[in-house]
View 1 (cartoon, one colour):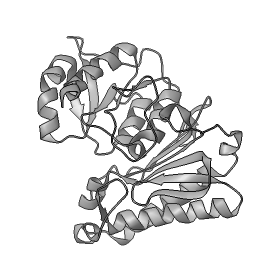
View 2 (cartoon, one colour; view 1 turned 30 degrees about the vertical axis):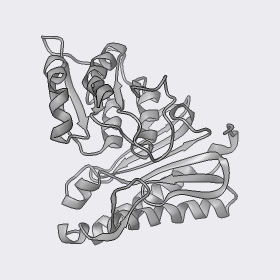
View 3 (cartoon, rainbow, N blue to C red; view 1 turned 60 degrees about the vertical axis):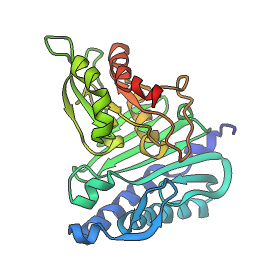
View 4 (cartoon, rainbow, N blue to C red; view 1 turned 180 degrees about the vertical axis):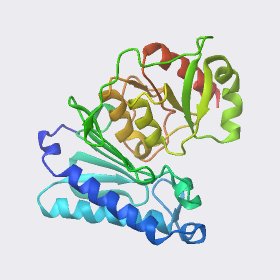
Length: 286
């Protein structure tokens, strides 16, 4: 798949913001847990059971993609629920998670995100635009390759010494996702050795946004994650001056498809990234 400088010419940001408004409407119109746990009876392209709110949110995203297509944009979409959808070209990929934090949305908890990335190739390193919004807090992250990050329309500037450690040298605060107890248990020795405190936001994309702001010192998924969850967020971290890794892949070569290939780690420093890599080493034998 070749690169395309036209990838950023379409109004991706406008489309993302309108899709986010659509997600807000979906959540506002389904305020109760009973409303939000309703399933469509089908499984999405990622293999999970599709909630009605997932489908409604995705419909809103695809309405915006149709609008861009009608205006002349050509691309291929990779989405949590619909899978891969052809919009006229394989040169540009749009990677979509219409609700990142579905469990939070279903339970009425905050930190419900939307994640949309645009890439000119098939790997994480090819992502050139990343958008993440937390509709629960009203937060928005926007990154363009080589241009840094905007948080709520203001440039993000993180000092080089932003990583914090406690007096024992442990990372002070780390976000953990894929927080199934069966995945936490094997990582516990490394967590106790290297991390002082944990936070679980319930959204990979939003957790990556917190790394970009240095609100946490790093994040790790304790099981293999999918591109739809992290394609936008990993660019946001990198454009903020942070680092990301996909253990098992060289550099940023993890593919932009629907399969769960690798854990994801992100940190402010090389030392922090190495500490977090120790959390997922057990997966080599899983």
